[in-house]
Image (cartoon, rainbow, N blue to C red; front, top):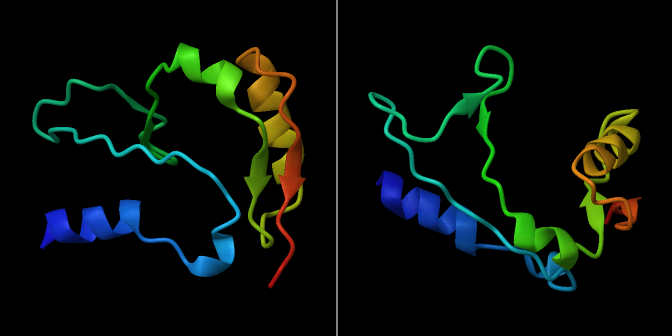
Length: 95
């Protein structure tokens, strides 16, 4: 069941977002002996995978229409910290 759920999460997209050309990445990790370090595990766990060749491919970052106040600025700061200053950060319009 988990495999099917993960596959659907990665490959399913509502048609109203079809104008977006995005890349999705799914990373499997062993919880007993993780090989990929888990960052910020206490607050909002995530993995970070260095994809240096993708930096030049990012053309825009769009946050959701219900993003909290300050989200755009945090994304811009995050991109600048990773030396990706040219990508515009926009907010999606509610549909």
